[in-house]
Every structure is written in C-alpha cells, then in structure tokens.
Image (cartoon, rainbow, N blue to C red; front, side):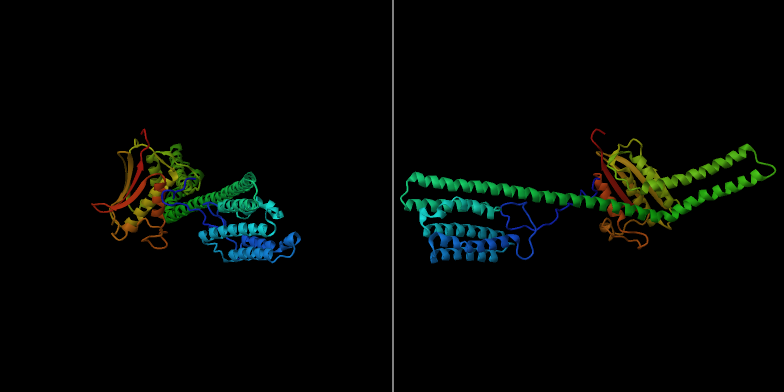
Length: 452
C-alpha cells in the first residue's frame, strides 16, 4: 500500500539511546542497562581478579610489597574509573578507555620490571596485553593501538637495559605490534558485526512503524468513509423508499388484477412489470454504489478516467443533493487519465459534494457544479457552489485535522484534511478559495503523465 502521508510525514526511526561504551560508530546503539551495566560489573570483577593474582607474584618472587602495591594501584584505579565514568558522555567514556589502557600497560610493565625484567615469567606475556585489552574494550580502536605502542616500547626498553642485540629488540617489538594489529582487526570485525546488528534492528523497527502507519491510514480513511455514509443515511433511506413504495404498489395491483374475473391485457401487465423491474434496478444500483464506496480493499494507483470517477461520486452525492441543490457535471471524455486509486479519488469528490450540500441547506436556487479542464501539463477539477463561501477566519484552517465548523453530529473534522492527503498521495494538490461572484470553490490539480 502506498502511504498517503508520504508527501507530508517522515517516519522516524524508533528512538534508542546511544550506548557510550560503543565509541567510533554511529549505528552501534544499545539500550542502557538499569543500575550498573554488565560491562561495569565485568570490569569490577576483572579488577578483583588482578588483585587476587598477587598469589602468582608470591609463587614467582615471594612476598613483595612492590608487586602488591602495583596490583593495588592497578585494581583500585580500574575500580575508581569504572565507578566514576559517566556513560551519557562519549568523551568521558573514551577518556576512561584511554586511562585504563595506559594504567594496564604501565602496571604490567612495572610487574615485569620488579619480578625480574627480561628474565621474568611475565615478560613472555607482553604480546598478550594489547590482545587482552582489545577483548575488554572491543568498541574502541584506541585500546589496541595505545597498548600496543606502550607494550612495544616497554619490551624494547627492558631488552635495551639488559644489553640485548638490536635484532632481538626489533623482534619483540614486531611480535607485540603484530598481536596488537590482530587484536585491533578482531575488534574492528566485532564493531562491524555490532553495527550491522543495530542497523538491522533499526530497519526492522522502521518497517514495523511504516506498516503500523499504513494500517492506521487505511483505518482512518475507512472511518471517514463510514462517517460520510452516516451523513447520507437519511437521504439513502428516502431514495430507497421511493422505488420500494411503487414496487409494493405494483405488486398489490398485480395481485388484484390477476385474481379478478377480468384479468388485464398483456400490455398492461408488461408495463407494470417494467416499472417494477426499474424500481428493483434502482435499489440494486444504490446498494451497489454504497457497497463499492465503503469497501476497504488495498489497491495501488492506476490510470483512471476522471469522467468515470466523477460520475460514480456524483451518483452517490445526488442522494444528498437532490433535495438541496442542482448538481451539474461537465467533464469532457477526452481529458487525459490521471494516476490515482479510483475509489479514493471518488471519496474525495464525495466529501466535497456532501460538504457543499451541507453549506447550501435551505437556500433557494442552490447549485453545485463540477468541471474538468486540461491546463498545460495538469488536469484541473473544480467543485463550485453558489453558497455563502468560506468565512475569512475559517479559510486558513480549512484543512487542519479535526477542525470543523459543523456540530458534533455532522462532522468529524477529518474530511477535508484527509481529502488533501489523498490528493497529494496521487501527486496532486487541493486548494480552497472563494469565488469572486460568490460561493466556494475547491480546486483539484493532477499532473498529466508524459506522452499524454
């Protein structure tokens, strides 16, 4: 279904809050967790784990106040930063990531230094530090690059202090940098997957919003149809009563004549039957018009002849106008077709004609006229009446939703607003104005398709 609000409404994506732990991407958005986020809990557990690993230091170098101090600084620094960081501020989150990267790298270098330098068991884990930080902070490319730089410098410095050859220094620097690049690549892939997942969620939310809007629009259009039919109810009853009345009279006549001793001639019976069939056809036509108008089928715009659409709308509108005003239709058959949904365009015209009938109620010599002309590259329909016209204070607000000058039992305030939206859906325009000679005029313009 083509949305009738497409020219006026931009459907916005479902609002979601940006997760500041996801830095450097615009689509990686996740709803915040109430209280502590899972990431905060994980980092606090990691800080506790760093402190608990002091037992490894004891096994490696025995009881040492220096290793304990380094681990305390590392764990407390991480815990303080995690508790302090403001998740609503992106720059604070990035500062937290940089601080934790620098703190982890320097503390690890310190541990290696106080546990034996190049000969320490921890020295072999230099390449793992950038990789580990990339796993802890995969949303930010800063962690892997910054840790790789610091760890490569730390390893190179320790090797240089031990007097190792330049080739060994370069080898270790290369190994640390390589693992940092591998970690950065893995984090990049993680960010891309997270971005794709978030974009998929947003796209699903957008499609659901569009589907909801389409359903709402169909229901609103159908509600206005039913409201228009409600306004026509009294006229429909009167219009059906007339043929039903003479159908009943004809059946009574046929019953009496057939049962009489002197039955009528075949010509008389044929005439009565023709009148009866005409009445039945009139009732059938009214019911068919109303049923076709009230249907809620989903359709796509097609090329339609304006003369046919106007005649369909005018046939239903005469139920309202026949005792109020004289309706004239002047639509040349050679007018080029327009791209529209015929039933919806008929609904627009019926709304305008019913409104004209309401404005002309009780006026003598009332007239309503529908004319169609081609003007350049556009087809123009005019619905005019010789009534009082639009008051100056009403004209600017005429197409506002829920604005009406009628009583609650007569108008919903949706008819003209919906009519304009439907016309705009077909690429046309609908404007209202007062005629110089008196009365109101509604002007509908539709583009003529190329080649016509």
